[in-house]
Length: 202
Image 1: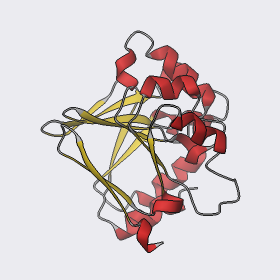
Image 2: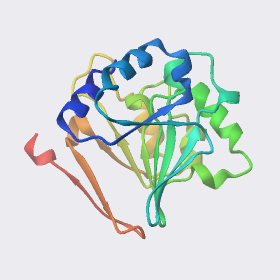
Image 3: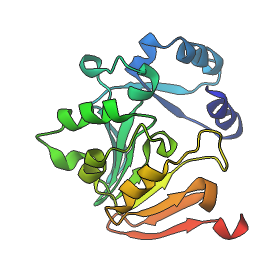
Image 4: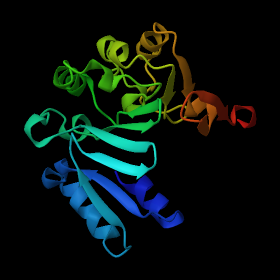
């Protein structure tokens, strides 16, 4: 489950590791923590309402989960960290592996402050699985760009065609790693300047 993260830690210099409070209920995560305990990483425990200041005009708002609003169904996926990275006027919403059940809870949680979920870029939940990306959630986020992290010819059939169609309803531009390879987004904090892929090399 954490093999990819371990590889990243081994190949890249990682200073901080952000983990949600669901770790208290997650034996796999405790095992992961044992692996990294000797690597001098700073573990940051977060929940909804936490803001992480990165540098001037750049910060991360943790939107989900919180201790009093965890989803008991498929707990690891539905209690993934949902975080919004803000750089001046440009924002990216990262949704982890949440499913429709968590999306509904998140929509309810931020019903009064609807703009908190709106983002220029959406990292589509759970690799574009049919269990996520409900129309109501997509409408609230209303992204200009959707990015789907998914393996080529994966056995799960991700991303789901219905999810793709739902995203396209909002005239959102879709990028996906199985077709576009590595995806980079350039922004000056005011607008999205360009999206760079290595599709021509695939």
